[in-house]
Length: 118
Length: 109
Image 1 (cartoon, one colour):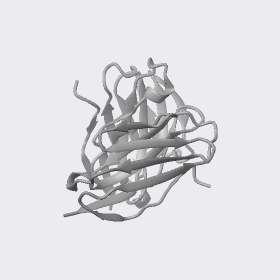
Image 2 (tube, rainbow over the protein chains, first blue to last red; image 1 turned 180 degrees about the vertical axis):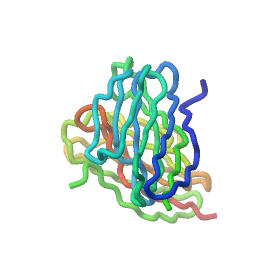
Image 3 (cartoon, chains in turn blue, yellow; image 1 turned 45 degrees about the vertical axis):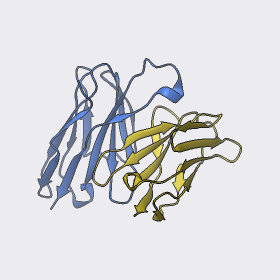
Image 4 (cartoon, chains in turn yellow, red; image 1 turned 60 degrees about the horizontal axis):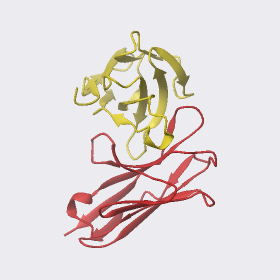
């Protein structure tokens, strides 16, 4: 396990279509995060899982967005009825919740899925 | 007010120069601070954590000023390979981390 894997790397879809992205975190990491990054901006938090429980959701996560982590391992992020404003890089990150020292709780990011809605 | 603010730059510096970036954060209760580096069209990668007493890793020095709520990154003897966007990251309430917009650095031969 060399890191966080995301699939697909790129996705082009027509407006109104549904898309689903997958993230495989580092195997021993129990925390998983989804972020969205648009050009010229830093990553924006979308949602967070600890094991299979979705513990936090950003206001950015509209009702068209849903994320799951059914077995506490990989996660999926689905966007329904895509809009052009959804075009962005979707980044997944994982970290270990077993590290007690807050300053050591680092994120490892996947390479991201670049979504283009046309 | 944004949780984390950074000067987007760009900073264009010659090889060998020293360059410093600052970042301010709004949540005085934040405990975790990091600098990440992001190359064009790539994912962010951890550069270094920022500790209260300040810390150094080779040519990179990070400092934290809790009273003024800012962190800094100093790069000495800049290399061409340092060209990237540098993201300031601060934890917020709960388990989320907030990223700055990033500061773009270009090191010129």
